[in-house]
Image (cartoon, helix red, strand yellow):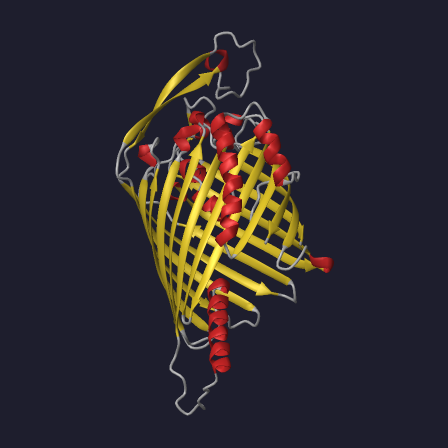
Length: 469
C-alpha cells in the first residue's frame, strides 16, 4: 500500500480535525463521513483489510518551474476477498484514497478503484502409474498445494511448472474533484487477459491483450480507447532470478475532437516571465494572451519493449533492474500544457488510474528510454529498506516553448528526468492477524528540459502509518 508523503497522523484524530476545519465544504465533510462508514461496512465482508494515513510535505506539488509547496494528507483503505474453487481462484479488491491539501484546498479529491480477477490453473495429466490417494486429507492437501503454487506463479511472474495458467481481470475506477478542478474528473474501465504457456521447465511465454476506455467528461478531447497487445518471454534459468522481455504494441483512439482555450499571464508586458513566474520589474504593463490547443488527432500507435531482471542475492535481499524503450509515436498524441495545473501523482494501483499523468505526460506523446534499479533489503527486528533510482529520457512530439508560450525554442521538447526514492518501514504484530506498519520515505526528483517551464527539482518527505487486520 502506498500512502503519499510526510508526517504521521492517526486516522481517527485527523478525520475529526478535518471535519472541524471550516475550509472544508459540505461535500468533503460528506465524503469523509462516507469513508469512515465504508471502513466499517467493508470490514464486515472483507477477508483482508488495511487502512492508512499519512501527510506529505512537497515543495513543488505541480512539478513545474515555479514551485508551489503544500502539505497533503492522504487517507487510504484497501480491502480484498478471495475464493478458491479447486483449479480456479477468484479475487475482488477495493482501493480508495482521499487527498486533502492544506493550502490549495480546491485541489482536494478522492479516487475509488474496484478490481475483479480470475486465475485458472490447467494441470497436466497425472502419471497413470502413480498410486491412488483416496483419503480426503490427501485431496485437500493436494488442492491446497495447487492453489498455493498457482498464486505463487502468478504473483512472482514465473514458476518451475509445465502447467498452463489463464488469468483475466476487470477493473473500474473513478476520480472525483472539487468544482474548481472538475476538469480532471474521470472514469476508466479496463480488462486484461493473459495466458501462460510453458517452454520446458525454466521458461514460459505469455501473450496478453488489454482493452480500456478512459472517459474525461469535462475534457472530452482526452477521452480515449486503448488496445494493447503484449508478449512476455521469461526464464528463471539463473538460480534465484527471473529475466523477462516484454515487447508490446499499443493503439490509442480518440472518439471525439475539441479545442481547449486557456489564458497565459505575461507580467511586465510580455517579457517572458509568464505563468506566474514573477517579474524583476514593477509589473507595469503586464497582460495576458489566449492560446487555442486543438485536440484533433484521431489515433496514435506506439511500440515499446521492456527488459527486466529480478534477482535474489541473499535471504531478504532482492535487486530489480529494468530498461524500457518507447518507440516513436505514429503521430502527435493529445496532451495539454501543464500550465492548466496538474496535481499530485499517486502511486500503486490508485496511481494507475489517476488522470494527471495521462493528461500532461502521456507516454504516447514521446519516444525515449527509461532505466531503473531497485534494491530491497530486510533488516533485523522486522525493518525493511528499499532504494529505488530511475532515469528517463523523453523526446516529445511537441516543440519546446519559452515561458510565455510565444517563442519556439526547439522543434522537440526534450526532458531528462532523474529521481531517487529511499524508504524505511517496520511491521509490528498487534494481535492475531493484525499488523501495524509505520513507514518513512524521502523522494528527490530533478527534471532538466529545453522548455524552461519544465525545469525543476524538488524534495518530498513522507511518514505514514498502515493498520492491516
